[in-house]
Length: 170
Length: 268
Image (cartoon, rainbow over all chains, first blue to last red; front, side, top):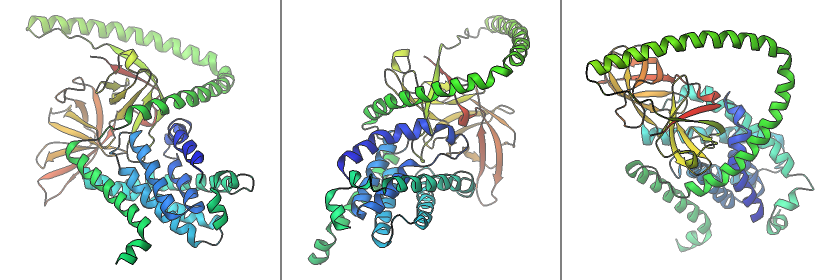
């Protein structure tokens, strides 16, 4: 991705997530925009670039919230690396069937985060939040990721956001 | 071996960064949360959040204003009735307060000074799945500072985590980093209430402590942050383990944290 695209993502991600999607968080349906954007970055770039993008997005989320610095950074970094590896292996990145992986990554990311929190603070319940919070969030994140991917892979948009080297590679 | 390192150099760099982040996490467990770059990030995100929320609220108020116009008269009548009832209740409460003050003076207790408060609007909610925070439209210029208690008429909401001139970040009581000293209203037993993302849990509750489902937990004031006697949460689940000397107690916050719109911040 071009550096300017990353700048826009990092600048607007938190305000959009925290204010525009806030009404959805009342009913635990707010998508994780960071995860959705990261999924698209992973499919369109390399695993290493996606991992660093995940770390940057996660660290920004950590700084902008009350969470421990590095918690989302580490989780999203791992997810970024995995989506990057997925992007290298799928034949058609635009295929809607790929979003199944986003749902899985979203669930895995949430579980990983709760596992970290359990490790740090102890006594974190898994089963209740899994169905009440994580599954609805994974569903809406999947939808958001799919819509962002559809937009990002349009003929008129893709050349604007992708770096030239990557366009030649693919 | 050098060939392997050369071939996978970029992946090894990523692995090193992951290990560094993990080390950073373990450091914070001991030393507390690092607040590097918190203020500039809050300043930038707060600016955009104000714009987005302002636009959204403006558009929503136009739609709502039209849609609810038809119900206004009925609502008006109901509110007039409620104001009358509340005035009566207020007079009675004032009587009781006065009597309470007289009795406190009579038995030599110090005078109760109700804390000054600032009304603030919630303009944004959490940005990370690992924490539960919200952003207010008032900040240090309105007298807000770190660790001031944030409440609603229902009960405690959380505390101010960071305050900038025009905005403040609030750590809600369900955030994993939140701990409140509480007391069971029924029998005055004490405990520490910790955030667990979507609910709270009482920490280190001994096996023999008398806690029941439905018990109301109020702030004890022992943490030095929250005023004494404010409702915090209601116990929803109590589990006793034969093998453990502690029991697991979960509680739901009294304040509706998912529907916060306006809050009061108590000033020192």
